[in-house]
Figure 1 (tube, rainbow, N blue to C red):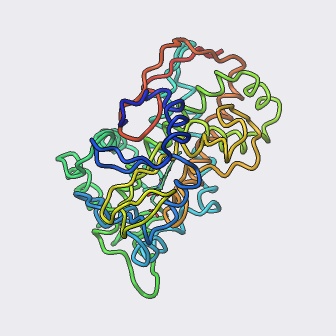
Figure 2: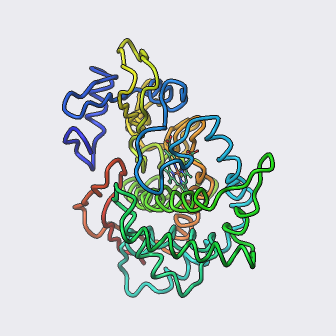
Length: 369
Ligand code: HEM
């Protein structure tokens, strides 16, 4: 993270910045940093002034995350349907099976929530969604690992992944199945289809945008519940609270702490003049702790309502995978609560991940019984 922020606890720093300098130009990095809820939301919403079309290398260039409307909206319409809450809901049983299978294989009373559960679940769910063969899972895991923490999305491993995906696409063209790749191959909007390059770019985007983020939602969720035992007991008693609990975890420990934009025009934000072409970093993690928006913002309140957090972004780029991430988070946490009457942190010393603007811990060993 920039500014030598404490990667485990950047919140006191955000709080100071919101009070003293909510829109701040950092001379060293030459980036405008935006901290308040209102301004972060504006930057994410206002694509006419804050564009997503900045320089991006390799396969992600020109994918939906790197385009503004109208090109963005057209492409997003082509890929959206399989990610609707209804369609994603049909994956429920498969996700439960994956989670239970992993937990059935745990030996003894200790589990590293991150490496044994929070990393494999999203990778296996996405592999399933894409319709990949079970025997290819380990290769796929290796490739998706190499996407983590990578800034240059054009390495050898990614070339291998793209070759593999191209083969699957060719297979599905001649013999369609009931999987995401087959669905995307026949999706049309105004008579237009995705090109093969667009399809490949989109699949790699899913892997980059969907895996580590969901890993961190699960890890941050378990950690937060273990730190707030009263909330954990409340949740055990009343499963209905899972919906608000997931939203509060997303707000309280947002898996993505910030998102970049580039100023498309000279623009003013909270009295600061931002020049066309400047890089702008909207601090989602700070917006979600803004007292002006969330009373007792530094407190974890399991049934907080309303909870208009920005963890999934806001506006045209709002996370496409949000229904899937929420479902995976709910299933993992509910299954842990159902299966184990006791969960305790084994080691209180936690090491943060150091992957850009992602927020989570490297390992989370817990005792279960
Ligand atoms: C807790 C987990 C997740 C978090 C916190 C998260 C967060 C975000 C955020 C903040 C954005 C907005 C980007 C922007 O404004 O430029 C975004 C976009 C996106 N996310 Fe997620 N995400 C999560 C899970 C997923 C999953 C599971 C998938 C798919 C499998 C996914 C796919 C996408 C895609 C495709 C976009 C781009 C949407 C667009 O540009 O129109 N995400 N996500």
